[in-house]
Image 1: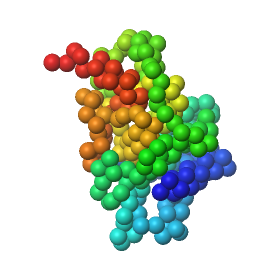
Image 2: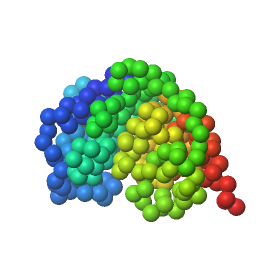
Image 3: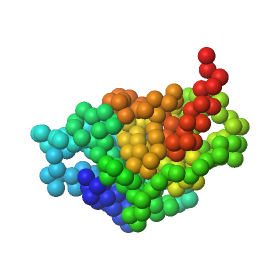
Image 4: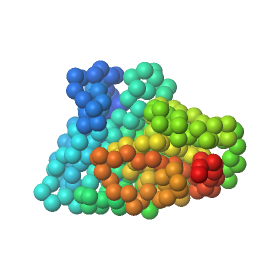
Length: 266
């Protein structure tokens, strides 16, 4: 499954490399009700064509198409976000982070802990990572370990998805205790965590097509992903109908962040 993830990320990279800026809305909405742009659809179609041609025992969930059944007896569920950070892609002039997220689960109705492989490509920095079910490695096959001894204070960078107003409310207890940032894409936040530029990333409502890559890649690097109360989210069922409140990253920083997030709650 690691090879499959690497092949999909390579397809995405080559598409970004060779395509013009496909940033126009194409008149359709995806399964989440968002307006679809051309690059989303192009990468999704290439991924699905690749999986069909290789006759793999999988079904697919994509942000754009929803569930796509490619086999009568699927053994795996392949989930991807073809273009995470579409606004960054459209307006960032190659400076703001965007890319592709992939996760593969065992079974067609898995829990998050059933992930067997995952990958992320952050195109603007030309960085990528793959989780093989045990460990996370970068594009040069170097082992990634989240083992920095973080000091948590106002200068410590944490990246939270602040697209939703709910996130401002939920992460307010951390204001001026850590340096809260948002880069406009979750693949960007993941990049900073795996590169140990940031201690933690988080979301009030991580989408199902994104959560698997975060969970697998951070786990493979020795980190942890939980809900906002500190409960491991591995027992959560993957569902297109769900979003996932999450905090993810370095284990030591995670413990301190969760404590600060909840210390004033009744």
